[in-house]
Length: 346
Figure 1 (spheres, rainbow, N blue to C red):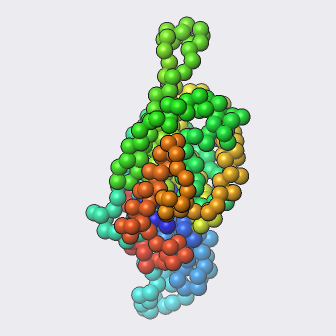
Figure 2 (cartoon, one colour):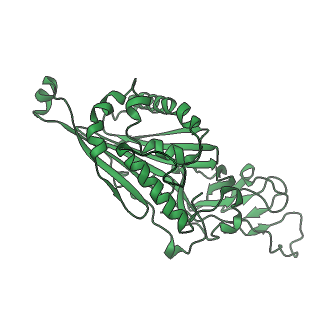
């Protein structure tokens, strides 16, 4: 797994002043908001008897264990042991590992590693996130597949012509010659592809828009370790931002922020959500069938063609990160890798 990166792990609106458990790379984490509204992220295990803190409650800035009432503040230190007399000092070991956290672009991001703040990679940018012209919905799905295969599915334009042939794939099929010729642009932590696809112009289109030519821009982007983006720009705009969350080696949660300027009315939300879920259900059986379940580190292990340019870029950057010691075996990951610092929020 990739470490020393910021992982998008939850929707911002899903974290409140009530404890919420999430799971990332076999580690259970409790999230909550303190009195200032900042997000706190702690390992979801009380050091006393191992109870899940997420079953407890938040009091002020602290979270209280449901089992024996121990309280822990945002930096993980225990502040209260009710069964002890006031003069008895709190044991030094009564402390919980803390995850560094940021809140931006509608997601909660956890830093998974031990790099100093000045050496941490930046969060990806989402420039249109706050544009009031967009209406946004939030969708969550689960796949019994490794997150690396899910990421490749989301940045692979060619598969849409086949797995989604009965939904939106027909339009993609016609655009494949343009898409496969598009140049992939890579940077240190991700890659992108952008292509203008000619569209048929109907009489209605000419009448309404007065245009004889029509093109649609389709863009794909990914940023390590676990976010992908899909956008469409035509007479409308659409943005899809995906947090591909590795619960463990065999389970992935996909959280999608879907923003649109077309049919941007509340009554259309259910329809858009239904389409989004149906698209995933068309992908799911194939995703869960792939073997090996994890994207191979050896670039020669599978066959590549021109239409695989984005997934090849992902494999190259993933391999590069591993060679730079940005990876550990998920089964060997422990809390010693966590950066113990007070969370920050933007």
